[in-house]
Length: 211
Image (cartoon, one colour):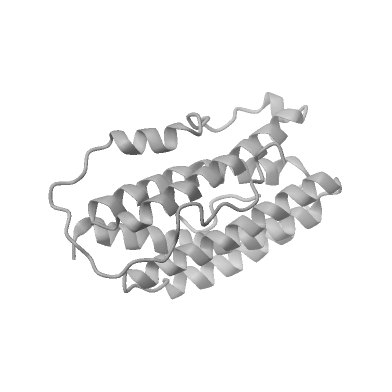
């Protein structure tokens, strides 16, 4: 198996289970906050995670791969536990943890897009980069919320991601691997297929799955 194809499958398996844990955690998160605008924003983020999970699942199928059953079980347990903890951890901790996680998710989808390109799965690239852009929106939202809290302004934040537009620009600057090989099977995702609600556009969780 092409090394980039193998790495892509591993990343997608991580992402598939990670989206499950995040969705369950965000469900508990939005139910734990009192502000109706925050509830709506975090609920939209939960919806984005479920949408991402569906798209990633389709990608795995097209690669003749399947989710990792152990990671699925682990993600379910951790996501539900974190959702419950949101009700007892206060307001700031879930917001901070979610922002930190979303920052990592941006890089993971960018990396997956490069592996897709290097194993000749160009049909996956636009969808992966778009999911990275949605994760950027999520990170922006949670970072903004943390900064509005009087204690959050005193906390050292996770490194700030580069501007959103650099997601595609930096991808285009990375050279293609020489040994890319052709793979069969394509995901039927159109450009813009994941353009759902943007939670971090002017509209909590820690890393639960080890991704």
